[in-house]
Length: 181
Ligand code: ZN
Image 1 (cartoon, rainbow, N blue to C red):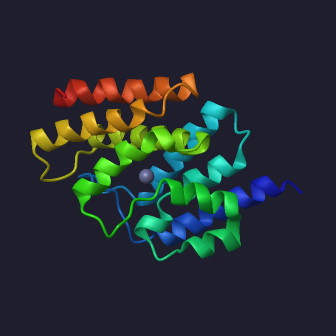
Image 2 (image 1 turned 30 degrees about the horizontal axis):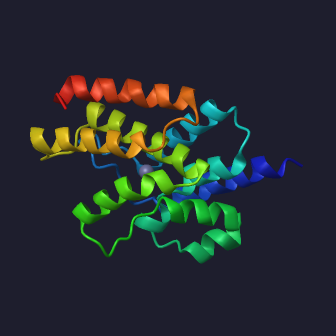
């Protein structure tokens, strides 16, 4: 039995169930799971699929923030390493949006190796998202600010995986072309 593949299948199923009622915030309102599979695919390609904890983190990284799943659920179902990774990239929801964004910039240099890779993949997916499906009601200024902020977070996560950074840079260039950030 390949237990890593079993865990991965289990996490995909779990994430899909946790986020079943959520859509991405763009005008196309894609199912939220598309973001999670995109992040996980980016991580798998960039690392040759060699780190199952990282891939589980990719699938589960928004469960803590956006669903009823708790850190204890993640420990029980997927182990402490995965729960720790998810916790590392989870914002404190009691804080304002502005403060959460500021803290992401502040915390980025202190993330673990996996946490940094996950951040880069997450921001890559989000920048691609705002280009092909911009959030409704966002002003040009807000879009521009978002692009600049994503780059600021990623700046402190660099130097670990050139292939993944190249994917981010491509998404960033494209977003800048659209929004002139
Ligand atoms: Zn995410």
